[in-house]
Amino acid sequence: MKYHLSSLLCFLKDLKKNSPQTKSSQNSALPEGICREFSLAEIKAATNNFHKKLIVGRTYFGHVYKGTINDGTIVAVKRLDHRSKGGFGMFRTQAQFLCQLRHPHLVSFIGFFLDQNEMILVHEYASRGSLSDHLYGEEYVRLNWKQRLEICIGAARGLHYLHTGVKRVVIHHDIKPTIILLDDEWSCKLSGFGLSKLGPLSMSKTLIRMESQVHGTHAYMAPEYMASGVLTERCDVYSFGVLLFEVLCGRRVVDKTLPNNQQSILEWASELGREGTVYNVVDPYLKGKIAPECFNKYLEIARDCVHYEGNERPAMGEVELSLELALELQQKADSEMQGLANNGECMYED
Image: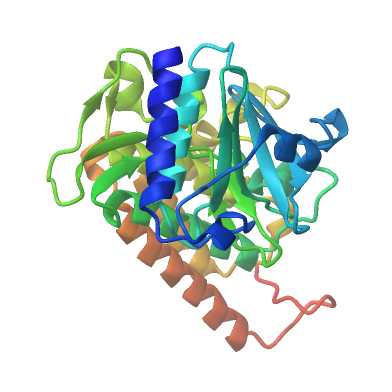
């Protein structure tokens, strides 16, 4: 453990040393360089000594706190349990990824603290919570259809960047609504890089990584990954497809409180598709608000993403473009609609 901690500290300090930031920018809440090293005193001050009332989330290996650093900037403080199995590996993975990845739809990394007893990551705070909060959280604002489409497009852009926009392909490996965070402007930010994996160079035609033990949330796992541990970027595409169905249905991917044939979103949607009544899966809040052309295009994308055969799934770039087209179809249909509901939204026949 001491060896690993020392090596990671050297890695993080080298990132700071080699970055162009000045001393003043090192003390900035959002540094121009790669990352900032916080003191434990600063972290405790930011979180009121890790007060339980400031806990805003839980991860596989610890808690996430809402904090305020010295200049008043609100941040998310992820405190990993160093005693948990895999906790240090998760810290190292997230630190390495977040230090080097920069994209409007990825959560911005601010800094870290690391010693023998604490592993802490600090990143930007998403004021509107997660996508899951707004899909099935009773205390949160429900998202309209265009908002959901725009969030999905942003998430697709973030994933596309991970798969093709960096020197080595990054497989997120944990795509689900809880890791899609929303800021003040409802722009989405991908988070949750603890299980992410590095593949070969982005231009490589082969991208396979064998896992000795499968990790992640079962309902979002691609069939080939569950069967053999083979992990590729198309596994992310599958998970994203599951997420698309959740966004459309406004419910959890698996809900044990429902009748047996409705508990799994994918199985239920497949059954209704065979019966020609797939529109019944739509979130009741969205009924009559989705243009038929947009609905058909969106459903086509979602189905393609969850194709059983990985090599038959589209790349994230294709998914991104298809979702943008779905949004355009919705906007065009809305502009052509003459009859408006009392709330100002266009209403379509089921």
